Amino acid sequence: MPNTPIDSLVLLPGLLCDGSVWRFQVDALAKFALCTSVEWGTQDSLTAMAEKVLREAPARFAVAGHSMGGRVALEVYRRAPERVRRIALLNSGYQARPRGAAGEEEEHGRLALLEIARTQGMRAMALQWLPPMIHPERRTDSDLVEGIVEMFARKTPGIFAKQICAMLNRPDAEGVLQSIRCPALVLTGREDEWSPPDRHEEMAARIPGSRLLLIPECGHMSLLERPEAVAKALQEWLTT
Image (cartoon, rainbow, N blue to C red; front, side, top):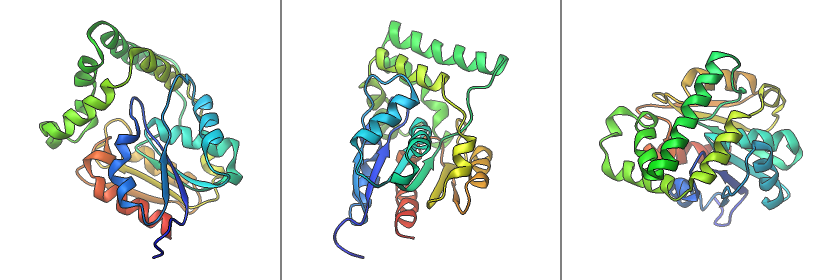
């Protein structure tokens, strides 16, 4: 392998996450790519987030997105497929918010968390929201839990509200999946309750030539729960 970076890799964090969520992967991939993480600000739509990525990214780049970041990656590809060399979708999804009762239930749940953030603080909200996101056996891992809670708590209720708005109004991206013609990785945890394996099987089936990887004993926060496995998958995706 060469000692100099061979590609530019743009990393897109998920809801309430920042660049620290990718720290292990950035270190592990340093020999294979020049990694930069996008920091979300006041954007309140996936479209605005994708436009931010395209303004800041190199002319051509690989992109990897986790959770909400994966949906942004799809919006990036929708707008500028000629600029995307590779795409990785981690613990993510592609469908719009469902109509009817299911969509109303999602909105109610998200807004209830926002109310906790506004009235009790971001940390209190994070402590309630986080447990179902990680593998049951890791919910007592104080280092893992505290690191994620601290990351969420660095954001404000105002930013949380804008990102909730972006997710509630997310566009359907099935057509984008079917249009992808670059090397694609679709990855999630086998025990991800938020972005389950069957959804990723659907995504991979819609992307010609994609690779599907389900990480065992892993929930939604794969980047931090199983950092070595994620880094290995990203390395293979970058170098194959």
